[in-house]
Amino acid sequence: MTGSILGTNPVLSGDDFIAWHHAIGGELTDIPEDSWRIVLKEKHNDMLHLLKFPYNGEPPKRLVTSKAITPNPLHFVRNHGGIPIINKKDFTLTLDGLVANPKKYTLDDIMDESRFPQIVETVTIQCSGTRRIEQIGLYPGQGDEIPQAPWAEGAIGTATYRGISPKKLIKDCGGLVNGGKHLELYGAETPANTIRSRIQIQEMPVSSAIMSPWKGYVIIHNGKIHFKGWAYSGGGRWPERIELSSDGGFSWHEVPLENMSKKGQWTWRTWEIDLP
Image (tube, rainbow, N blue to C red; front, side, top):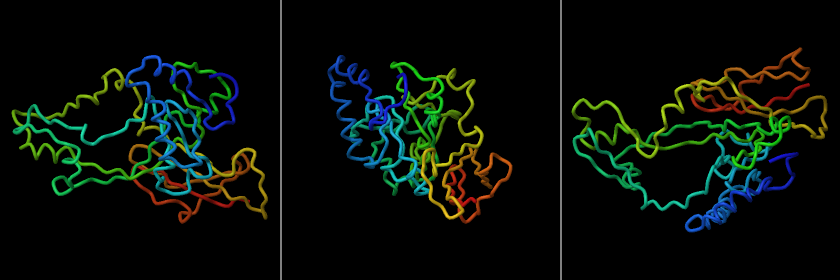
């Protein structure tokens, strides 16, 4: 990927990745086309398709903060492979080892709220490559071997997630035995070296962006300009105050609380303000 970013949608086609799948053949042959059909069916018509395959996309700036909870069709997608076609019957969870009564659960079993009450959390997630387009502008060319999408500020979204506590499953299996204290998740494990020296994303500093107006906008105003954006803080904390400057930092204007979305332990705060 070299030079300036194209003004097409999709921005990048991922032809090399598609060709690799076709060359290997077998079950991989249809994955690129199947993935694209799912995107066209499930995502918003105005999504910015940054990489057709593996699919990566974000909403346009004007829609990023249109709602405090991001609608599914507008939630960004970060992907390194094909989009799976999921059949619930193909998924099971086996809980064995140091439990009294090892069991195997189907996805329907786990989703049965009469057996396992669900936990609901509203969470903001963000791709670490958010605003990569600015980096590419300075240092173009990351090669064709890694799917590095040219993200703007839309690789962030807030959704309500539902799930169950592992404690409920352990209790359903009769509890831990023989001094068992830990869970080991096969199929989702992360090598120790991967996490040993890394900064945890929830402990990173405040991240924020102005989504409107944007560079190149033609603004007609009556003395004030309307700004919109988002701010997010990790570590289970939230931004208490948001300030903007329109003169390079000489003076600052605080966003009124009533113009900020509801605070949450794991969520962003969208905001808007009129500045002179």
